[in-house]
Length: 227
Image (tube, rainbow, N blue to C red; front, side):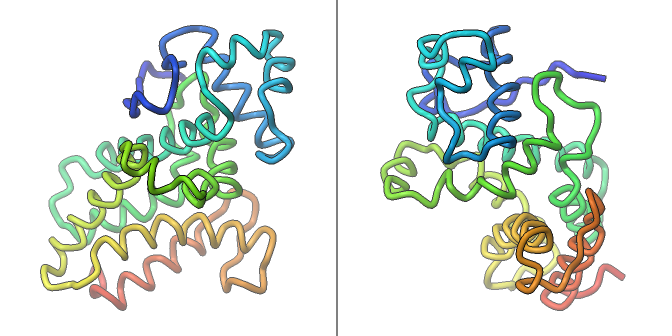
């Protein structure tokens, strides 16, 4: 079942918001599938236009270059996770319980339903795991930060950090914990799948339970058990 959700992203990320047109939505759909299939390094607009049965010029009408497209997709995911956190924690008053739900959402966001028709969240999650850091581990990060391109990530971290401070007002590193929960959720799925000697968790298909248990372990030891 699909739903009509429009994710609000920084206008500097695109020439024209692809969420506004049928061609733009097709562009998002095929770019996610193609990056997942061949990797971001091999991905380019010529290949994207081919699988879309369109032209490179039509792709450039939406994005200046493939880096901006990747940053758009990553920002889309950050905002999607933030949306899910809001939905999943509504009317949950206990902050420790909310943080547990946030952890589960970070780990399982790709399996949430209903989905958005032109975004396969499961495939996009694989891109976030494998390619996501390339959106901001770049030479131009400071300039792009000044433009406000990472506000969705910062907002997500602040949302998690605020819950951390509700649990432990004197905790000295709420934003550090917040960003690390997000990064660890993705990094250790990647490690388990490709570099298993760098982690102690195991991933079987899309069963990420051990990753969730690991994050809960760190939170319990830093902030106290939810019980």
